[in-house]
Structures are given as C-alpha cells and as structure tokens.
Amino acid sequence: MQLECFRGADFSQVSARARRSLGDDVMILHTRTLRDDGVPRVEVLAAPASTLEHVQQRLQAAPLPTPLRRPNGRPYVIALVGPTGAGKTTTAAKLAVRPGTFGIGRTGLLTIDTYRVGGMEQLATYAELASVPFDVVYDATEVNDAFARLRDCDVILVDTPGRSPAAADVTDRWRTLLDALKPDEVHLVLPATMRGDLALNVERAYRTSGAHTGATHVLLSKLDEVPAERGVTDLAMSMALPTRWITDGQDVPAHLAPAVPRLLRSLGLGVDADDSWTNA
Ligand SMILES: Nc1nc2c(ncn2[C@@H]2O[C@H](COP(=O)(O)OP(=O)(O)OP(=O)(O)O)[C@@H](O)[C@H]2O)c(=O)[nH]1
Ligand SMILES: [Mg+2]
Picture 1 (cartoon, rainbow, N blue to C red):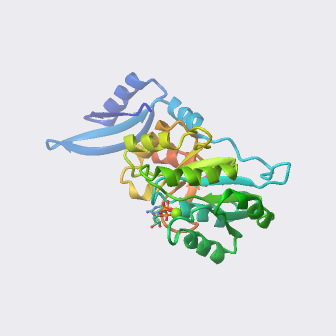
Picture 2 (spheres, protein in one colour; picture 1 turned 30 degrees about the vertical axis):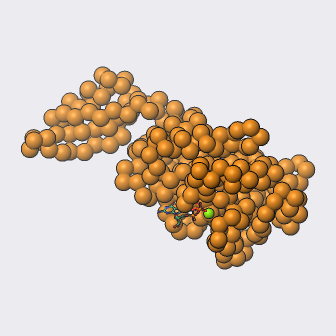
Picture 3 (cartoon, rainbow, N blue to C red; picture 1 turned 30 degrees about the horizontal axis):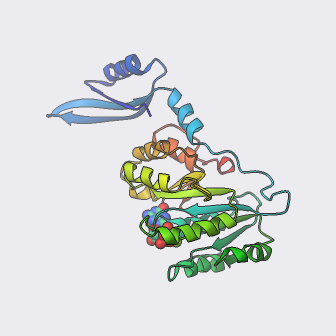
C-alpha cells in the first residue's frame, strides 16, 4: 500500500511536497509535530486518494447470503482455523453471541476441538451463558446427527483445534473432519501481533491442499495488542484473502467489529463510526 511520510518546516511546505509526489487528490492521514535535533518539524503521513478504494476492493468480503440457510435447509457453516492461541474459540463465541451479527439468523456453536483438554468446555461455557445451541463432533460419521440437532440454527460457527505445523498427523485428522462439515467459509484467525513473514507461512499452510478445504477469509485478532495499528492493514493486504471481522480485546461479545471500516480507520481514512455491521 502506498503510504508515504513527509517532513518539513511547516505544514504548507510538507503538504505541497506530498501533492507533488502522490498527486493533487492526496489524502493526509496523520499530522504531528516533532523535533529533529531540537529543530521543530511537521510530519505528515499521506496516501493517494485511490488507497481507500484499493483497500476496500482488496479486502471487502462478499456480503453474506440472504437467507443464510441453503435451499436444501442446511445452515450456513463458518469455521475458524488458525495457530494455537490465535483467538479462535473466543471469536467463535463472540460471533455466535453478539445479537445481530447475522441479522435475524439464529446461531449455533459446534466444536471439533476434542483433542485438547478443556478445548470443548471453553466453548460450551460461552454457549451455556448465552443460551446458544452447542454441539460437538468427534468424527465424520457424527456430522449429520449434529446438524440434525442444530436444525433450528441458520448459521453454525465451527471451532477447530490450534495445532503447530509440527503436529501434521493430528492436523490432517481434524482437517478431514472439517471437510466433512463442508464449511461455506473458513476464516484464518491470525493475531495482529504476528510478524508478516510468519503470517504468510501460516496462510500458506492453510491453503486448499489435496482434498482439504483451505481458508477463504482472514480474521485478524488482538488488534488491541498492536501499538501502531497502521501495520495491521498491511498485514491484511499481504494475504490473498478478503476479511469480514476483526477482534480487539478479550470481552465476549464486545470486542468484535467489521474488519474493513476498522482497518480503514486505523489508517486515518474517515469511515462512519457506526462500523456498518450490515455490510460485514
Ligand atoms: N487482547 C486480546 N486477547 C484476545 C483476543 N481474542 C482472544 N484473546 C485471548 O487470547 C487467548 C486465547 O484465546 P482462545 O480463543 O482460547 O484462542 P484459540 O485460538 O481458541 O486457542 P487454541 O484453541 O488453544 O488454539 C485468551 O486469553 C483470549 O482471551 C483479542 O482480540 N485481544
Ligand atoms: Mg480454542
């Protein structure tokens, strides 16, 4: 993304330089004053006007279908995958519990994280507190029964285990189970604190491979833990995936927001504060 920093003696001089470099419709995103060797200076961060459109086009996910339920009555299935501790379980709970995330669609929670002690209980607790239907699937033969029990739900959020790439055999087993659920969307949950090169490696590991369904979206978590949020948009832009939501704290369900308006705001690009949930 083309963001540039300009420094000079005063604002008019610096903004003139920004215009010469990035075009007449340049957008000034941030301005600050600082001292260079004791000399007062003005610094602006600027981007060409096309940045807004570019970010939107690149990251905006297609709207969720309406109605969410498939013509054959099957609920819309959204799975969360990603590295250990990325925030998958908490995010699944936020999405299921927050009223209106899916319009009037009723949500259910399903976990296939049956490998780790406590993995299942964590989600069950959130489901119980919010009176959201909850189910567990241990192997592919149980999928139809679980869907039958969750038949009143229009959307099912699926939580998956976090596994390091070293645990390849276990990963293969749960990915096979996830395939059996035929998810409509697979969101790769990545902490915003993750280094860009490592995040790209993770993204590669979760691409469609062989028979396994790959990630269809990226969901950046823990935005509250990055000191300069600007880099987060770069991280999102470096993935070849659209994004629907971000998370920015531990509270369920408060710390969840539509991704693109939030990422644009972190760039200083004015977007309606209402977060446009309907377009998430
Ligand atoms: N600061 C911050 N913490 C978060 C956020 N989302 C989740 N967490 C915390 O991160 C920790 C791990 O969250 P989980 O939801 O258990 O992560 P997970 O990906 O399900 O972890 P595994 O199932 O072990 O792979 C918990 O302490 C959460 O409260 C967030 O947006 N910001
Ligand atoms: Mg988990």
